[in-house]
Image (tube, rainbow, N blue to C red; front, side, top):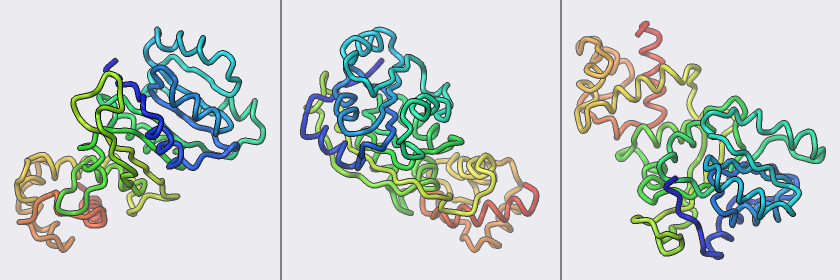
Length: 266
């Protein structure tokens, strides 16, 4: 399934340290592979729910972790499961559990963005996410205005991302072709910007980035199918110069632009 298994114990310690685990924590792990991280999570947390899509790996995990009594192994696609449903077992069997959960995982690269979005937009969101991702993806997520992207906006709306450490390819087996990074996302109690409808908000953002390197006035008109004169008027009301490019806009500027678009009925 395109997984690269972590084999460096020092990196393992960095991940668990960043997650600040306690015996009262419930942890969700995605793509446990051979269970190296799973064992350490189970040692430090109260309960671990580990979700593995590969049936063969899931069967091996059920054997190798049979003696560990605080791990639930789920052989399903995490993108098709509501995280709230996964919390029912620990809540029933683990009365001392804290409300909420943390996500700690060495994510398979090919599902990084969908998994992040799945949890950030879930009905019950995690308190914290500590995930191993491709180095370039981590850098894109923590980007500031000037280098923003749909990905950075989609994460920064919900939480504060921080790169904890870079991890060279040699720390995995088999070694991937790129280096990785440990990314920590601390979720906000409420979204960072006043956005009441994330569907229409991200439709606007995607339209802004639809024409790479184009001026925001042109890309929005093209991406939304709205007359450019109308777009220019709305940009003026938002105080955004139409010659700017999408990657230069801050999260607050996107939210302000969205509110104006919604008010105008777009």
